[in-house]
Image 1 (cartoon, one colour):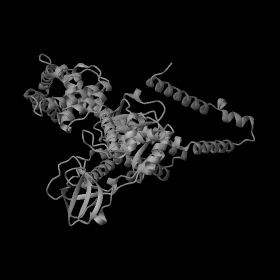
Image 2 (cartoon, rainbow, N blue to C red):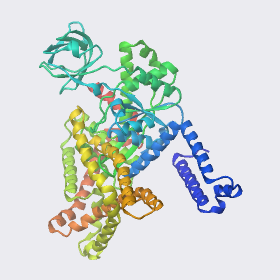
Image 3 (cartoon, rainbow, N blue to C red):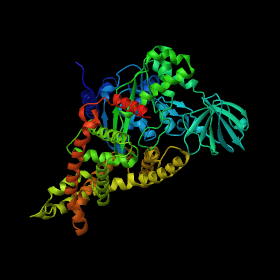
Image 4 (cartoon, one colour):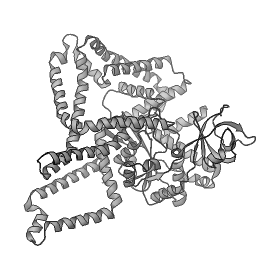
Length: 640
């Protein structure tokens, strides 16, 4: 009988617990300790004989299975990292992951190094990532990437050079696929070569160099963009030969391994996908051509909530796999335009599948309104899958409404959208959350006044919060706070640097958490070691006691985090009670339940009114989101 994934995980965890407790029992009772029994029966065998034998066997096992052991160790380590930096990691669609055989995992890149950590920690398969060579050469990040069996990839954007002079565009008669770039003060012969890419500042156009005529003229492939007539400054991205990388990737897939790719090419903090790089399409068709393997491409949606901040949340959604089309392999092999069309087609399907596992929106403010609308529309408890599904329905419904109205949605929706925005702003100003608003009504009635104050619950809430914060104060003050302060300022510094070097980041928030984690990996053990040295040098404690204290630091640090979080949750729940003591905020608080109820009713009525015009978004209880995204893309193409 097949066992579901949650049941299998529970059984494995129970077995692990039993083994650990059994080993502790053997170590605690000498009469049943097998090593003690062996030494008693054979007095000529000394304890160090057994210890040395065990050490040599451990070394043999570790060396013979080094890669697997390192990967397993890294995965355990990152599980603990996620439990510290995220308060909740939800997994959706785990049944879509093939249990065996080659797989290509593709994910959106919204949180730099953390994306790969989240994916590997939530996936039962062993993943070898393609990682930028620039990141692979960094200390700590590169060391961990090596232990995980990552494959370094040299990216063109990592060797970008500022071009000399300016360029204007000139069409070539009879050559629609080419365009002439005419330079003013340029040095094309020394700065450019065939297959390099010319990137123009401010307009997002990349052109591949086809030929270099002289220092003032080059020819490049034409794109679908309308080229401006004014001169533009430019950057040159050196062409990169990825032949060795492709050979490693194809060998890994041919042997039944898995590859993890972020096809956007770099991390960003936008609310939709960046244009995908062609590499994943080339890999999919190359392994089909070389080994006859139609490798499943599994989209992984990494949906972060306050993802750049400590103790945020993330929902990981594994979508249904897609495959390269074997019927188009002959066109791929032909090369040229036929190959380009094949790669474009599979990239479009890959983008559709990736959008089927994320919630995308035109901008951050719209995304915030979508999540607020989802909470208002259905207030009861929902599973992670239901939240994802409903948020996507609102997001795609919003886009479809814009398409149906040619970008001019009805006044009713604009008014409702503004009210949702105002409601969210009022929540932010008062410092409370949407889930707390219904409880404001429960704790207030017209005849008895404020229940929380009347029943003296306020002092008890304050006492409980103070107790939790006191429990967490000592470990937080000495073990967590120093590292937290340094990590925060370091992350801000790295964010500014990343933002200055990027053309696609908005605020650079995608690098914040990654930089904090990388720094904490170094500073936290260093701080523990520093305290251990202080205990050894300035106390009379013996070595076993100091060792016990040192190994207890991780436990105390984690207890401090959990206790502090519980205290902060209580503090947030206490805030509505506290601010009711002030007349001005009291009136605003008491108005919130009615505002929410009226807004909720109007939102539901609006959805009910326009729902039938939205088609399957409203009528179908279960949607194949990949197929929906594909049909949506085709509708847009027809409309253009």
